[in-house]
Length: 391
Image (cartoon, rainbow, N blue to C red; front, side, top):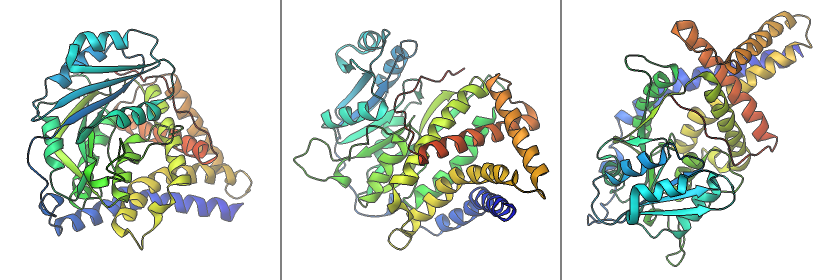
């Protein structure tokens, strides 16, 4: 037990150090010597493109009207539509979406709650647009966000573009979640320059079908998501593009904004959901480990995704295994007690403030990810979730 616990602890620490310290240095160095995807490959046709913005919404009556008006305010060349898929909403989401957009918005009301993946599959299959933009109901786009996404997709090899998410707290205040996203932006820029930006966020990303077409006669060229997919469409759709040879870039000018989490409870639930989806990816998308065929893509997946998903699980398992060792049992008890205390504080809604708050926030979200990854690896799935509260 001692050797197992120490080995798992060392592995967890090594994965964390590589992902948060070693990999950022390497990927930025690689990006500096790269020409940039915006300069690579033949340019796509520059005429007006048709664009559909797809939103999967469930019980979002409080925000959907403002979201529709925000999307309609975007200045886009060519045909532009907003399509709202209401996932078994029990409130007035569909009616408020129609009222806010009129004939410029298509609202598809699905009678039964099935989950975001199923709704997106149906919306994608029914679309004939050149470019599909994906976003959430509780998001706001800066002016020009959609235009920036479309521009980023112009080079011929580019098949998907990830926008930038800004998390906003109270005026003059920063949040651990917002600070984390700010630090991630430079990594996304570096990966995007190499065409391997796997850090999309469901708030703002886009894909074009021409670079990933399976069959010109099919309604949709994007491969459908598995219906039991948990919270990972913003990862699976871009990697589907990458698997077919398309580059995935970062569109710095495409900015979306959301309110930061109101308290750790909502963030813990969200991270647990993400962890379940991560476990599903680790079980199902084994092609991502192929360093021989796709070395850069595999490096990005391992370093920015798999390492961060597995590190907290390894550390948690190390603490559990240490209970069977007389030599290191006290350390395991302390770690598990700290984990239990942090989880209890998060469930009670204790806010994260100051330097200690940052450590507390980092601990609870990683505990949630560890639990979710374990559940996902064991086959647990839950495609439909309650909407998280935001400030």
